[in-house]
Length: 542
View 1 (spheres, rainbow, N blue to C red):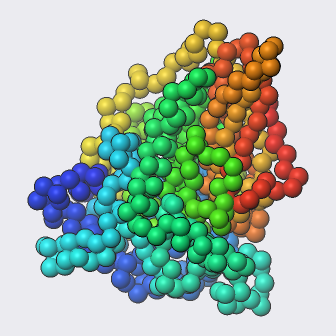
View 2: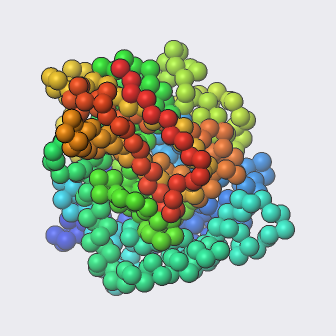
View 3: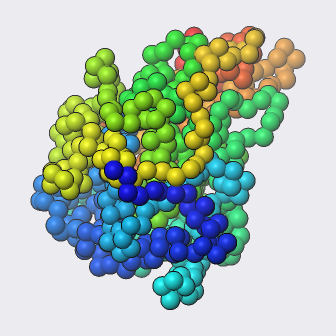
Protein backbone atom coordinates (compact mmCIF):
# COMPACT_ATOMS: atom_id res chain seq x y z
CA UNK A 1 0.00 0.00 0.00
CA UNK A 2 1.49 3.30 -1.12
CA UNK A 3 1.84 5.78 1.73
CA UNK A 4 4.39 8.28 0.43
CA UNK A 5 5.24 10.07 -2.79
CA UNK A 6 8.83 10.99 -3.59
CA UNK A 7 8.71 14.25 -5.54
CA UNK A 8 11.16 16.28 -7.61
CA UNK A 9 13.36 18.51 -5.44
CA UNK A 10 13.09 21.23 -8.09
CA UNK A 11 9.28 21.15 -7.88
CA UNK A 12 9.52 21.52 -4.09
CA UNK A 13 11.95 24.40 -4.60
CA UNK A 14 9.49 26.14 -6.93
CA UNK A 15 6.59 25.64 -4.52
CA UNK A 16 8.71 27.15 -1.73
CA UNK A 17 9.39 30.23 -3.88
CA UNK A 18 5.65 30.58 -4.55
CA UNK A 19 4.75 30.50 -0.86
CA UNK A 20 4.04 26.82 -0.19
CA UNK A 21 7.12 26.43 1.98
CA UNK A 22 6.20 23.51 4.25
CA UNK A 23 7.03 20.53 1.92
CA UNK A 24 10.62 21.68 1.32
CA UNK A 25 10.98 22.88 4.92
CA UNK A 26 10.13 19.37 6.14
CA UNK A 27 12.85 17.88 3.95
CA UNK A 28 15.43 20.42 5.11
CA UNK A 29 14.51 20.06 8.77
CA UNK A 30 14.70 16.26 8.59
CA UNK A 31 18.13 16.40 6.95
CA UNK A 32 19.32 18.90 9.54
CA UNK A 33 18.06 16.51 12.21
CA UNK A 34 19.95 13.40 11.10
CA UNK A 35 23.12 15.41 10.51
CA UNK A 36 23.00 16.65 14.11
CA UNK A 37 22.62 13.19 15.69
CA UNK A 38 25.45 11.52 17.57
CA UNK A 39 27.58 9.88 14.84
CA UNK A 40 27.39 6.52 16.67
CA UNK A 41 23.59 6.38 16.32
CA UNK A 42 22.23 4.21 13.52
CA UNK A 43 19.97 7.02 12.19
CA UNK A 44 22.76 9.60 12.11
CA UNK A 45 23.81 10.83 8.69
CA UNK A 46 27.43 10.02 9.48
CA UNK A 47 26.61 6.38 10.28
CA UNK A 48 24.31 5.97 7.27
CA UNK A 49 26.66 7.75 4.89
CA UNK A 50 29.47 5.52 6.15
CA UNK A 51 27.74 2.32 5.04
CA UNK A 52 28.56 3.02 1.38
CA UNK A 53 32.32 3.52 1.72
CA UNK A 54 34.29 5.31 4.42
CA UNK A 55 34.75 4.84 7.32
CA UNK A 56 36.06 1.39 6.47
CA UNK A 57 36.65 0.73 10.16
CA UNK A 58 32.91 0.72 10.74
CA UNK A 59 33.04 -0.35 14.38
CA UNK A 60 34.18 3.19 15.22
CA UNK A 61 30.91 4.64 13.92
CA UNK A 62 28.28 1.89 14.07
CA UNK A 63 29.33 -0.43 16.84
CA UNK A 64 26.01 -2.25 16.78
CA UNK A 65 26.96 -4.07 13.56
CA UNK A 66 27.77 -7.76 14.11
CA UNK A 67 31.47 -8.64 14.38
CA UNK A 68 31.55 -10.59 11.14
CA UNK A 69 30.64 -7.41 9.27
CA UNK A 70 33.39 -5.22 10.71
CA UNK A 71 36.72 -5.67 8.99
CA UNK A 72 39.98 -3.84 9.38
CA UNK A 73 39.76 -3.15 5.67
CA UNK A 74 37.21 -4.23 3.11
CA UNK A 75 35.84 -1.23 1.24
CA UNK A 76 32.24 -0.66 2.27
CA UNK A 77 28.92 -2.42 1.78
CA UNK A 78 27.96 -0.95 -1.59
CA UNK A 79 27.34 -3.18 -4.60
CA UNK A 80 28.60 -1.98 -7.98
CA UNK A 81 29.18 -3.82 -11.22
CA UNK A 82 26.74 -6.63 -10.45
CA UNK A 83 23.01 -7.38 -10.52
CA UNK A 84 22.53 -6.11 -6.97
CA UNK A 85 23.48 -2.52 -7.84
CA UNK A 86 19.86 -1.22 -8.24
CA UNK A 87 18.33 -3.22 -5.39
CA UNK A 88 21.10 -2.63 -2.82
CA UNK A 89 20.88 1.12 -3.38
CA UNK A 90 17.06 0.95 -3.21
CA UNK A 91 17.32 -0.62 0.25
CA UNK A 92 19.93 2.01 1.18
CA UNK A 93 17.64 4.91 0.24
CA UNK A 94 14.76 3.28 2.11
CA UNK A 95 16.89 3.06 5.23
CA UNK A 96 17.90 6.72 4.98
CA UNK A 97 14.29 7.76 4.32
CA UNK A 98 13.21 5.97 7.51
CA UNK A 99 15.86 7.94 9.39
CA UNK A 100 14.47 11.21 7.96
CA UNK A 101 10.99 10.12 9.05
CA UNK A 102 12.23 9.63 12.60
CA UNK A 103 12.74 13.41 12.64
CA UNK A 104 9.74 14.46 10.51
CA UNK A 105 7.07 11.73 10.32
CA UNK A 106 5.80 11.13 6.80
CA UNK A 107 8.53 13.07 5.00
CA UNK A 108 9.86 11.42 1.84
CA UNK A 109 13.19 11.68 0.06
CA UNK A 110 12.90 13.86 -3.07
CA UNK A 111 14.72 13.04 -6.30
CA UNK A 112 16.93 15.31 -8.35
CA UNK A 113 15.39 14.97 -11.80
CA UNK A 114 18.70 15.27 -13.62
CA UNK A 115 17.16 15.06 -17.10
CA UNK A 116 14.37 17.59 -16.69
CA UNK A 117 14.43 20.87 -18.62
CA UNK A 118 15.60 22.86 -15.62
CA UNK A 119 18.71 20.75 -15.03
CA UNK A 120 19.57 20.63 -18.73
CA UNK A 121 19.40 24.41 -19.00
CA UNK A 122 20.48 25.53 -15.52
CA UNK A 123 22.42 22.73 -13.86
CA UNK A 124 22.02 21.81 -10.21
CA UNK A 125 18.81 22.99 -8.46
CA UNK A 126 19.72 26.01 -6.35
CA UNK A 127 18.65 24.34 -3.11
CA UNK A 128 21.85 22.25 -3.26
CA UNK A 129 24.14 25.28 -3.39
CA UNK A 130 22.52 27.98 -1.21
CA UNK A 131 24.70 28.75 1.84
CA UNK A 132 21.72 29.27 4.16
CA UNK A 133 18.01 28.45 4.22
CA UNK A 134 14.95 29.76 6.06
CA UNK A 135 12.54 27.38 7.80
CA UNK A 136 9.82 29.72 9.09
CA UNK A 137 7.49 26.84 10.01
CA UNK A 138 10.15 25.66 12.47
CA UNK A 139 11.18 29.12 13.65
CA UNK A 140 14.61 28.82 12.05
CA UNK A 141 15.96 31.57 9.81
CA UNK A 142 19.31 31.81 8.04
CA UNK A 143 20.56 28.39 9.15
CA UNK A 144 23.35 26.54 7.30
CA UNK A 145 21.89 24.63 4.37
CA UNK A 146 22.01 20.89 5.20
CA UNK A 147 21.90 19.95 1.49
CA UNK A 148 24.93 21.99 0.48
CA UNK A 149 27.58 19.97 2.33
CA UNK A 150 28.32 17.91 5.41
CA UNK A 151 31.04 18.35 8.00
CA UNK A 152 32.55 15.12 9.32
CA UNK A 153 32.16 14.77 13.08
CA UNK A 154 34.70 11.92 13.15
CA UNK A 155 37.82 11.40 11.07
CA UNK A 156 37.67 8.79 8.30
CA UNK A 157 40.74 7.05 6.99
CA UNK A 158 41.84 4.46 4.48
CA UNK A 159 44.78 2.43 5.72
CA UNK A 160 45.14 0.52 2.47
CA UNK A 161 48.79 -0.13 3.19
CA UNK A 162 47.65 -2.50 5.90
CA UNK A 163 50.19 -1.21 8.42
CA UNK A 164 48.84 -2.50 11.73
CA UNK A 165 51.22 -0.24 13.61
CA UNK A 166 49.81 2.86 11.94
CA UNK A 167 46.76 3.36 14.12
CA UNK A 168 46.48 7.11 13.93
CA UNK A 169 44.53 8.61 11.02
CA UNK A 170 47.44 10.91 10.31
CA UNK A 171 49.63 7.88 9.55
CA UNK A 172 47.31 6.59 6.82
CA UNK A 173 47.83 7.53 3.16
CA UNK A 174 44.20 8.66 2.75
CA UNK A 175 42.21 10.36 5.46
CA UNK A 176 39.82 13.21 6.13
CA UNK A 177 39.95 14.56 9.65
CA UNK A 178 37.01 15.55 11.82
CA UNK A 179 35.87 19.01 10.75
CA UNK A 180 36.37 18.36 7.02
CA UNK A 181 33.47 19.70 4.92
CA UNK A 182 32.51 17.98 1.67
CA UNK A 183 33.15 19.82 -1.61
CA UNK A 184 32.10 19.61 -5.25
CA UNK A 185 33.47 20.63 -8.63
CA UNK A 186 35.66 22.69 -9.10
CA UNK A 187 37.12 22.32 -5.60
CA UNK A 188 39.41 19.60 -4.32
CA UNK A 189 38.75 17.55 -1.22
CA UNK A 190 41.86 15.38 -1.17
CA UNK A 191 43.28 16.34 2.20
CA UNK A 192 45.36 13.35 3.31
CA UNK A 193 49.09 12.93 3.72
CA UNK A 194 52.26 13.19 1.68
CA UNK A 195 51.66 16.62 0.18
CA UNK A 196 47.98 16.17 -0.68
CA UNK A 197 46.76 18.79 1.76
CA UNK A 198 49.22 21.42 0.59
CA UNK A 199 48.44 20.89 -3.09
CA UNK A 200 44.71 20.87 -2.44
CA UNK A 201 44.97 24.10 -0.47
CA UNK A 202 46.87 25.73 -3.34
CA UNK A 203 44.26 24.54 -5.83
CA UNK A 204 41.30 25.74 -3.77
CA UNK A 205 42.91 29.16 -3.32
CA UNK A 206 42.31 29.66 -7.05
CA UNK A 207 38.55 29.37 -6.46
CA UNK A 208 37.76 31.62 -3.48
CA UNK A 209 34.33 32.83 -4.62
CA UNK A 210 31.48 30.39 -4.01
CA UNK A 211 29.15 32.06 -6.52
CA UNK A 212 31.76 31.57 -9.24
CA UNK A 213 32.23 27.97 -8.13
CA UNK A 214 28.49 27.32 -8.29
CA UNK A 215 28.45 28.69 -11.84
CA UNK A 216 31.33 26.43 -12.84
CA UNK A 217 29.53 23.42 -11.34
CA UNK A 218 26.31 24.25 -13.16
CA UNK A 219 28.09 24.77 -16.47
CA UNK A 220 29.81 21.42 -16.11
CA UNK A 221 26.55 19.62 -15.28
CA UNK A 222 24.87 21.16 -18.33
CA UNK A 223 27.79 20.15 -20.56
CA UNK A 224 27.61 16.55 -19.33
CA UNK A 225 23.83 16.39 -19.73
CA UNK A 226 23.62 17.94 -23.19
CA UNK A 227 26.77 16.65 -24.88
CA UNK A 228 28.92 18.33 -27.51
CA UNK A 229 27.73 20.99 -29.91
CA UNK A 230 27.27 19.92 -33.55
CA UNK A 231 30.61 19.61 -35.29
CA UNK A 232 32.10 18.39 -38.54
CA UNK A 233 32.67 15.45 -38.27
CA UNK A 234 29.52 15.10 -36.18
CA UNK A 235 29.71 13.98 -32.54
CA UNK A 236 28.72 10.38 -31.80
CA UNK A 237 25.11 9.43 -31.31
CA UNK A 238 24.18 9.41 -27.64
CA UNK A 239 27.30 11.22 -26.40
CA UNK A 240 25.49 12.87 -23.51
CA UNK A 241 24.31 11.97 -20.06
CA UNK A 242 20.74 12.70 -21.09
CA UNK A 243 20.97 10.23 -23.97
CA UNK A 244 22.46 7.55 -21.71
CA UNK A 245 19.66 7.90 -19.18
CA UNK A 246 17.07 7.56 -21.94
CA UNK A 247 18.81 4.62 -23.58
CA UNK A 248 19.11 2.58 -20.39
CA UNK A 249 15.32 2.42 -20.14
CA UNK A 250 15.28 0.19 -23.22
CA UNK A 251 17.79 -2.39 -21.98
CA UNK A 252 16.16 -5.72 -22.90
CA UNK A 253 16.53 -7.57 -19.59
CA UNK A 254 17.21 -6.87 -15.93
CA UNK A 255 20.79 -8.20 -15.88
CA UNK A 256 22.11 -5.90 -18.61
CA UNK A 257 20.01 -3.00 -17.33
CA UNK A 258 21.32 -3.36 -13.80
CA UNK A 259 25.09 -3.05 -14.12
CA UNK A 260 28.09 -2.24 -16.29
CA UNK A 261 29.64 -5.73 -16.15
CA UNK A 262 26.62 -7.48 -17.67
CA UNK A 263 26.10 -4.70 -20.22
CA UNK A 264 29.73 -4.90 -21.39
CA UNK A 265 29.45 -8.66 -21.88
CA UNK A 266 26.19 -8.23 -23.80
CA UNK A 267 27.69 -5.60 -26.11
CA UNK A 268 30.66 -7.88 -26.79
CA UNK A 269 28.40 -10.79 -27.72
CA UNK A 270 25.73 -9.18 -29.92
CA UNK A 271 26.08 -8.94 -33.71
CA UNK A 272 27.72 -5.68 -34.82
CA UNK A 273 24.55 -4.39 -36.46
CA UNK A 274 22.52 -4.65 -33.26
CA UNK A 275 22.16 -1.58 -31.03
CA UNK A 276 24.35 -1.54 -27.93
CA UNK A 277 22.72 -1.53 -24.52
CA UNK A 278 23.30 1.05 -21.83
CA UNK A 279 23.06 -0.02 -18.21
CA UNK A 280 21.55 2.13 -15.47
CA UNK A 281 24.93 2.16 -13.77
CA UNK A 282 26.56 4.05 -16.65
CA UNK A 283 24.73 7.41 -16.34
CA UNK A 284 24.92 6.89 -12.58
CA UNK A 285 28.72 6.87 -12.85
CA UNK A 286 28.70 9.85 -15.19
CA UNK A 287 26.79 12.05 -12.77
CA UNK A 288 29.10 11.10 -9.91
CA UNK A 289 32.10 12.27 -11.94
CA UNK A 290 30.32 15.41 -13.17
CA UNK A 291 29.52 16.62 -9.64
CA UNK A 292 32.72 15.27 -8.16
CA UNK A 293 35.33 16.81 -10.35
CA UNK A 294 35.65 15.81 -14.00
CA UNK A 295 35.16 18.19 -16.88
CA UNK A 296 32.54 17.12 -19.39
CA UNK A 297 34.22 14.58 -21.71
CA UNK A 298 33.90 16.65 -24.88
CA UNK A 299 35.97 19.42 -23.30
CA UNK A 300 38.32 17.21 -21.30
CA UNK A 301 41.92 17.63 -22.34
CA UNK A 302 45.09 16.34 -20.79
CA UNK A 303 45.47 15.55 -17.12
CA UNK A 304 42.49 16.17 -14.87
CA UNK A 305 44.83 16.41 -11.87
CA UNK A 306 44.32 14.16 -8.84
CA UNK A 307 45.74 16.76 -6.51
CA UNK A 308 46.26 19.65 -8.89
CA UNK A 309 42.65 19.70 -10.08
CA UNK A 310 39.14 19.16 -8.86
CA UNK A 311 38.60 16.25 -6.51
CA UNK A 312 35.13 16.60 -5.01
CA UNK A 313 33.71 13.89 -2.80
CA UNK A 314 31.09 12.67 -5.28
CA UNK A 315 33.83 11.67 -7.70
CA UNK A 316 35.00 8.67 -5.65
CA UNK A 317 33.21 5.94 -3.73
CA UNK A 318 35.33 6.54 -0.63
CA UNK A 319 33.33 9.54 0.56
CA UNK A 320 30.67 10.21 -2.10
CA UNK A 321 27.81 9.31 0.25
CA UNK A 322 28.83 12.04 2.70
CA UNK A 323 27.76 14.66 0.17
CA UNK A 324 23.98 15.04 0.69
CA UNK A 325 23.44 15.36 -3.07
CA UNK A 326 24.44 11.67 -3.34
CA UNK A 327 21.06 10.56 -2.01
CA UNK A 328 19.02 12.85 -4.26
CA UNK A 329 21.03 11.55 -7.22
CA UNK A 330 20.45 7.96 -6.15
CA UNK A 331 16.77 8.67 -5.61
CA UNK A 332 16.64 9.57 -9.29
CA UNK A 333 18.52 6.37 -10.11
CA UNK A 334 15.87 4.44 -8.17
CA UNK A 335 13.16 6.33 -10.07
CA UNK A 336 14.78 5.30 -13.36
CA UNK A 337 14.83 1.72 -12.06
CA UNK A 338 11.09 1.98 -11.39
CA UNK A 339 10.46 3.48 -14.85
CA UNK A 340 12.34 0.53 -16.41
CA UNK A 341 10.24 -1.88 -14.36
CA UNK A 342 7.02 -0.26 -15.57
CA UNK A 343 8.16 -0.19 -19.20
CA UNK A 344 9.06 -3.88 -19.10
CA UNK A 345 6.19 -5.17 -16.96
CA UNK A 346 8.36 -6.10 -13.96
CA UNK A 347 6.83 -4.04 -11.15
CA UNK A 348 5.84 -7.03 -9.01
CA UNK A 349 8.45 -9.60 -10.00
CA UNK A 350 12.03 -9.30 -11.10
CA UNK A 351 14.21 -12.05 -12.42
CA UNK A 352 17.50 -12.96 -14.00
CA UNK A 353 16.56 -15.46 -16.70
CA UNK A 354 17.90 -19.01 -16.55
CA UNK A 355 20.06 -18.50 -19.63
CA UNK A 356 21.90 -15.67 -17.80
CA UNK A 357 22.46 -17.45 -14.49
CA UNK A 358 26.23 -17.61 -15.00
CA UNK A 359 26.44 -14.38 -16.98
CA UNK A 360 29.07 -11.75 -16.10
CA UNK A 361 27.69 -9.55 -13.36
CA UNK A 362 26.00 -12.41 -11.50
CA UNK A 363 29.02 -13.54 -9.48
CA UNK A 364 30.55 -11.95 -6.40
CA UNK A 365 33.84 -11.87 -8.31
CA UNK A 366 32.52 -9.59 -11.06
CA UNK A 367 34.07 -6.11 -11.22
CA UNK A 368 33.64 -5.20 -7.57
CA UNK A 369 34.45 -8.52 -5.95
CA UNK A 370 33.05 -10.13 -2.82
CA UNK A 371 31.12 -7.97 -0.39
CA UNK A 372 31.22 -8.66 3.35
CA UNK A 373 29.74 -12.05 4.13
CA UNK A 374 29.75 -13.14 0.47
CA UNK A 375 32.63 -15.52 -0.33
CA UNK A 376 34.53 -15.14 -3.63
CA UNK A 377 32.89 -16.92 -6.53
CA UNK A 378 29.43 -16.95 -4.95
CA UNK A 379 26.50 -16.81 -7.34
CA UNK A 380 24.45 -13.69 -6.66
CA UNK A 381 20.69 -14.16 -6.70
CA UNK A 382 17.76 -11.82 -6.28
CA UNK A 383 16.00 -14.08 -3.77
CA UNK A 384 18.94 -15.39 -1.76
CA UNK A 385 21.78 -12.84 -1.57
CA UNK A 386 21.40 -10.55 1.43
CA UNK A 387 21.51 -6.79 0.86
CA UNK A 388 23.63 -6.21 3.96
CA UNK A 389 23.40 -4.46 6.35
CA UNK A 390 19.72 -3.60 5.75
CA UNK A 391 17.05 -5.60 7.58
CA UNK A 392 13.46 -6.09 6.52
CA UNK A 393 11.31 -4.79 9.41
CA UNK A 394 8.62 -7.35 8.57
CA UNK A 395 10.91 -10.34 9.03
CA UNK A 396 13.90 -8.93 11.01
CA UNK A 397 16.07 -10.69 8.45
CA UNK A 398 18.40 -9.02 5.94
CA UNK A 399 16.67 -7.63 2.88
CA UNK A 400 16.96 -9.58 -0.35
CA UNK A 401 16.22 -8.06 -3.75
CA UNK A 402 12.85 -9.75 -4.20
CA UNK A 403 11.64 -8.06 -1.00
CA UNK A 404 12.06 -4.60 -2.53
CA UNK A 405 10.89 -5.05 -6.12
CA UNK A 406 7.40 -3.56 -5.77
CA UNK A 407 8.06 -0.16 -4.25
CA UNK A 408 4.36 0.64 -3.89
CA UNK A 409 3.21 -2.50 -2.08
CA UNK A 410 6.39 -3.79 -0.46
CA UNK A 411 8.02 -0.49 0.55
CA UNK A 412 5.08 1.91 0.59
CA UNK A 413 6.23 4.71 -1.70
CA UNK A 414 5.98 5.76 -5.31
CA UNK A 415 7.30 8.59 -7.51
CA UNK A 416 5.69 11.83 -8.53
CA UNK A 417 5.95 13.26 -12.06
CA UNK A 418 9.36 13.43 -13.70
CA UNK A 419 11.20 13.27 -17.00
CA UNK A 420 10.73 10.22 -19.25
CA UNK A 421 7.34 9.43 -17.69
CA UNK A 422 5.76 9.58 -21.14
CA UNK A 423 8.09 7.05 -22.78
CA UNK A 424 6.64 3.79 -24.07
CA UNK A 425 8.38 0.63 -25.19
CA UNK A 426 7.60 1.67 -28.78
CA UNK A 427 10.02 4.59 -28.40
CA UNK A 428 13.06 2.31 -28.26
CA UNK A 429 15.74 2.93 -30.93
CA UNK A 430 15.66 0.91 -34.10
CA UNK A 431 18.37 -1.63 -34.86
CA UNK A 432 18.59 -0.14 -38.37
CA UNK A 433 19.43 3.36 -37.19
CA UNK A 434 22.71 3.60 -39.15
CA UNK A 435 22.74 6.17 -41.92
CA UNK A 436 23.50 4.81 -45.42
CA UNK A 437 27.23 4.72 -46.03
CA UNK A 438 28.09 4.90 -42.32
CA UNK A 439 29.50 2.13 -40.17
CA UNK A 440 27.53 -0.31 -38.06
CA UNK A 441 30.71 -1.53 -36.40
CA UNK A 442 31.91 -0.95 -32.85
CA UNK A 443 35.21 -0.24 -31.16
CA UNK A 444 35.93 -2.44 -28.13
CA UNK A 445 38.41 -1.21 -25.54
CA UNK A 446 39.82 -3.46 -22.85
CA UNK A 447 42.98 -4.20 -20.89
CA UNK A 448 42.76 -1.20 -18.54
CA UNK A 449 43.42 -2.19 -14.93
CA UNK A 450 41.65 -0.02 -12.34
CA UNK A 451 44.32 -0.88 -9.79
CA UNK A 452 46.78 1.32 -11.69
CA UNK A 453 44.82 4.46 -10.85
CA UNK A 454 44.14 6.33 -7.66
CA UNK A 455 40.45 7.09 -7.80
CA UNK A 456 38.03 7.51 -10.68
CA UNK A 457 38.93 8.19 -14.29
CA UNK A 458 37.40 8.86 -17.67
CA UNK A 459 38.06 7.30 -21.08
CA UNK A 460 37.47 9.16 -24.33
CA UNK A 461 37.79 7.39 -27.69
CA UNK A 462 38.96 9.06 -30.89
CA UNK A 463 39.69 8.17 -34.51
CA UNK A 464 42.00 9.92 -36.97
CA UNK A 465 41.64 9.45 -40.73
CA UNK A 466 44.23 10.95 -43.09
CA UNK A 467 43.32 11.48 -46.75
CA UNK A 468 45.66 11.11 -49.75
CA UNK A 469 46.64 14.74 -49.48
CA UNK A 470 47.81 14.33 -45.89
CA UNK A 471 44.86 16.16 -44.33
CA UNK A 472 43.71 14.57 -41.09
CA UNK A 473 40.10 14.30 -39.97
CA UNK A 474 39.40 13.75 -36.27
CA UNK A 475 36.38 11.86 -34.90
CA UNK A 476 35.27 11.93 -31.28
CA UNK A 477 33.67 8.53 -30.58
CA UNK A 478 32.37 8.96 -27.05
CA UNK A 479 33.32 8.47 -23.42
CA UNK A 480 33.19 5.92 -20.63
CA UNK A 481 33.20 6.84 -16.93
CA UNK A 482 34.88 4.65 -14.33
CA UNK A 483 33.73 5.38 -10.79
CA UNK A 484 36.29 3.93 -8.43
CA UNK A 485 38.03 4.30 -5.07
CA UNK A 486 41.22 6.06 -4.11
CA UNK A 487 42.83 2.62 -3.83
CA UNK A 488 41.34 -0.59 -5.24
CA UNK A 489 44.42 -2.82 -5.15
CA UNK A 490 43.89 -3.42 -1.42
CA UNK A 491 40.10 -3.35 -1.42
CA UNK A 492 38.37 -6.70 -0.90
CA UNK A 493 35.35 -5.32 -2.76
CA UNK A 494 37.39 -4.37 -5.80
CA UNK A 495 40.41 -6.54 -6.45
CA UNK A 496 38.77 -9.71 -7.79
CA UNK A 497 38.01 -8.21 -11.19
CA UNK A 498 39.69 -5.00 -12.17
CA UNK A 499 39.59 -4.87 -15.98
CA UNK A 500 37.65 -2.03 -17.58
CA UNK A 501 35.81 -2.95 -20.81
CA UNK A 502 34.10 -0.28 -22.92
CA UNK A 503 32.40 -0.19 -26.32
CA UNK A 504 32.02 2.74 -28.69
CA UNK A 505 29.71 2.98 -31.69
CA UNK A 506 31.25 3.99 -35.03
CA UNK A 507 27.94 5.26 -36.43
CA UNK A 508 29.33 8.74 -36.98
CA UNK A 509 32.12 7.42 -39.27
CA UNK A 510 31.74 6.60 -42.99
CA UNK A 511 32.28 2.88 -43.49
CA UNK A 512 35.06 3.40 -46.02
CA UNK A 513 37.09 5.35 -43.44
CA UNK A 514 36.95 2.85 -40.59
CA UNK A 515 39.67 0.53 -41.92
CA UNK A 516 41.99 3.48 -42.57
CA UNK A 517 41.49 5.04 -39.16
CA UNK A 518 43.94 5.18 -36.29
CA UNK A 519 42.04 4.70 -33.05
CA UNK A 520 43.21 6.14 -29.74
CA UNK A 521 41.86 6.16 -26.21
CA UNK A 522 42.73 8.94 -23.79
CA UNK A 523 42.65 8.24 -20.07
CA UNK A 524 41.66 11.39 -18.18
CA UNK A 525 42.82 10.85 -14.64
CA UNK A 526 43.39 13.07 -11.65
CA UNK A 527 47.01 11.96 -11.68
CA UNK A 528 49.60 13.54 -13.93
CA UNK A 529 50.54 10.85 -16.48
CA UNK A 530 49.48 7.33 -17.42
CA UNK A 531 51.12 4.62 -15.33
CA UNK A 532 54.19 3.07 -16.88
CA UNK A 533 53.47 -0.04 -18.89
CA UNK A 534 49.77 0.66 -19.42
CA UNK A 535 48.56 -1.20 -22.52
CA UNK A 536 45.12 -0.66 -23.98
CA UNK A 537 43.66 -3.22 -26.37
CA UNK A 538 41.58 -1.77 -29.21
CA UNK A 539 39.56 -3.93 -31.58
CA UNK A 540 37.00 -2.97 -34.22
CA UNK A 541 34.17 -5.50 -34.27
CA UNK A 542 32.11 -6.21 -37.36
